[in-house]
Amino acid sequence: MKTSTLIAATAALGLALLLPAPAAAADCDNPKKASGSLSESTYRQMTRIQEDIGESKYADAIKSLDRLVNRVKNNDYEYALVMQTYGFAYSAQEQYSKAADAFQAAIDKDALPQEPQELMLFNIGQLYLAGDEPDKGLKYLLRYVNTACSKVPPEAYILIANAYAEKKQFSKALPWIDKAIAGKGAKTPESWYQLKLASHYELRQFKSAAQVLVTLISKYPIKEQYWKQLSGVFQELKDDEESLAVMALAERQGFLDTEKELSNLANIYLFMDIPYKAAKVMDRAMAEGKMERNYENLKKLGTAWQLARVDDKAIEVLSQAAEAGRDGDMWMQIGQIYVDQEKWNKAIDNLNKAVEQGASRSGEANLLLGVSHWNKGDKSRATAAFKKAQRFDKTKKQAATWLAHLSTQG
Image (cartoon, rainbow, N blue to C red; front, side, top):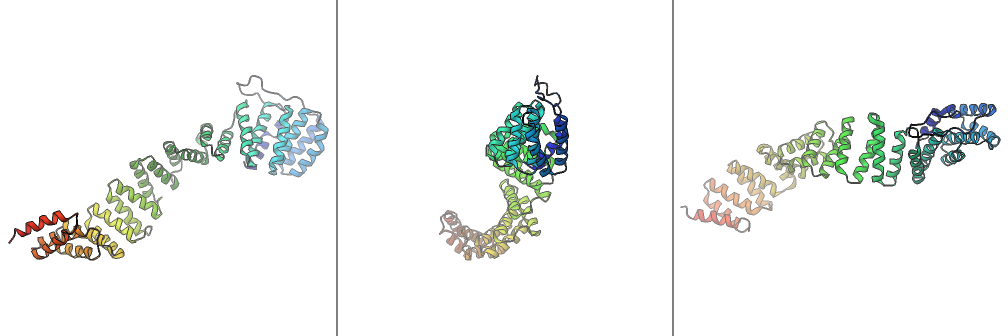
């Protein structure tokens, strides 16, 4: 816990700590009152010490307290007040162990009013957390929230939640986070929602994580990480449509700017059978320099255009991929497009390249070559191509059927 938090607590109490606390909450029927009062001499000295602390003259304040403490040790109320003030001075100098001991000494006297006693428990808890002692911090914070008569600030709940989270006890942290958020309302800090999000995610409670992210997006719509995280959570939930919608909206707002993110969006479009949008995402990313025009990306882009039946763009991009990777399969895809368009000469040129470069589907390439030659009226070349196709198991039967058909023709 930051020192500023403890200093703020000091300032808020000020000299009011010298007087009895105001009436406690209604559920505490008999709030504790001060067990004594200050002598005039002690009052004057404490006033000067408080002024020194207010002016950050901590060393002077501690020296004055050292002189005063022996004089008041037989007066429980004055002694408790002196030890409490020691605690504030030490904590302001980040001497957390000394501060905690001083506050504990003040509590042990049980002489101060209800509210200061409660706040010292709160302060000790914060000090132990600041000193990386979460177990001790939790002990005092839990004692504070469970015994306080005055209203517990939401900050106490979030401190408890943080302590549990530090211990990887996320299921214990979540109820305290929810209490903190409920107490803070519309003024809830972003970091509290982030802690809630992290806890749900660690527990693989993805639906709850998605709800937190929706809240974060509504409050911080320009923070791209929340859009990306929400899409990822929907993917964990196997809700591809929601994930796609979120990613698409993030892309339109310019939040997706790495090749991996844009490639993932394209993959989701392809998975959802929306190849045209997949192609548009990749095409724009390449034009903007966010995605390399390498073999793998060109292959995926060309295939997307082909599936979207934008044949001219598919042929252009697949040709680039085929040249980049010397890939017979790319020439095979181009040849298929030309066969579908009944552009037989271009189909033959590309299918020949597919066969020459060892396409994995050489049987199909030869079968389509035979069909293309036959449609051009070249029975001899068609027959030769069908015979080659007959050597492959996948195309053996079809090739035989074509050859039988050709044999019946004059």
